Image 1: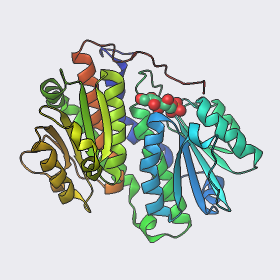
Image 2: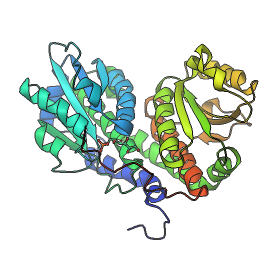
Image 3: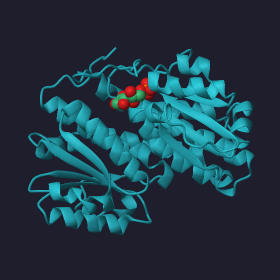
Image 4: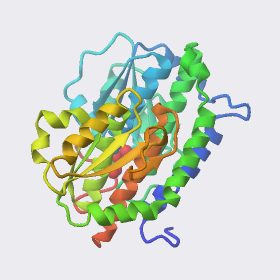
Length: 359
Ligand code: F6R
């Protein structure tokens, strides 16, 4: 039930720290050793390329997962939009392994791909919130998100759970393959830091509400920009904002704006800017200046180690590859407040259903 919450979306955003702690309990033993079904670990470790298929927010979680899995396993990863992949298979590698990300486990676009993967006799893993769902039953293996029922149409806690479970899988496979980065990766500790960081952000939600009131109350369009994993989060932040507030929002790789889309920047256009990537933090600061000098209202969401006094939202420092777990929370909250302050039904945006069972 919603309890004292007006909308499920906020309840589900607030639950994310406890989802991280639950995943940590579920997938680690007391000695901080990662615990993933050995058959899954071996099957992934034997593959020469991982294909992640999903739709919408789950696809965005896959984009983050690619970065994490490549970093900690050294196995190349391709991420596909299920509806495109299903009718235009790329040339597959010799030993592919397929991962399906789906909160509901019922998404028709993903089912089309899995059917073909099964016809080819190839191994697959569904990462889902729903035990016994179709994608779970039809895949070789399943890992559960343990996020608890997600009721709001806009996905929040399932996204962060999907990112975390992919990290858990990466840690297990990387250790099995004796990849130094995976062995040294104290994921259990990092997930605890992430949970604390998420809690800090949800405790400061009124600050995010005031940013939404100041910048998102009347605007008709908005942008999200970021580089590296922040680019993936920019896509998710934009989807979240547009689907619940109806503000037309685009997520961009920060440097791409100047290749055309900067023409749309004019006085008052909000540009939410994400900065976690050590390799590009300064470059993204430069992109902020480009849009600010054209009148944009920039909202900065920045990791503590790169933050300046003038930044709007300062993120607690966590491992760069896991930073999407905290960066996405203010983005979810901005979307929530932009919608609620307009008097919209946050949990049931128009034209949408919770699970999309048609192609
Ligand atoms: C957006 C959203 C959708 C779903 C997409 C896939 O907030 O919820 O984009 O992520 O329809 O759904 P699942 O994960 O159930 O396959």
